[in-house]
Image (tube, rainbow, N blue to C red; front, side, top):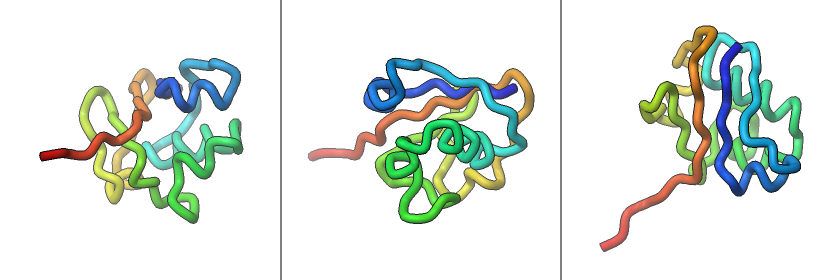
Amino acid sequence: MVQIHLASFLQERIGGITSVEVSADTVSGALLALTDMYPQLVRMIWAGEQGVASPMMAVFLNNELVEPLRLQASTVKPGDRIEVLIAVSGGD
């Protein structure tokens, strides 16, 4: 199982749950499993269609940023940790 840790703004939408364990082969598959379990997160995780990550999200696999276009190619194994956070963009 892969553990997905959720940012507080996502936790608020699923009753305060801080993390979820899912079975998946890729980061994208893990996020799909998450949104299958909690459909209210679909609009926050995915941009329009499932499989394309929202630009509002920053996804980390074992503390390393996974670029949105690499979610499907990034494989996971049991014990891996995914973190879903709000993306923060630069300023001046």
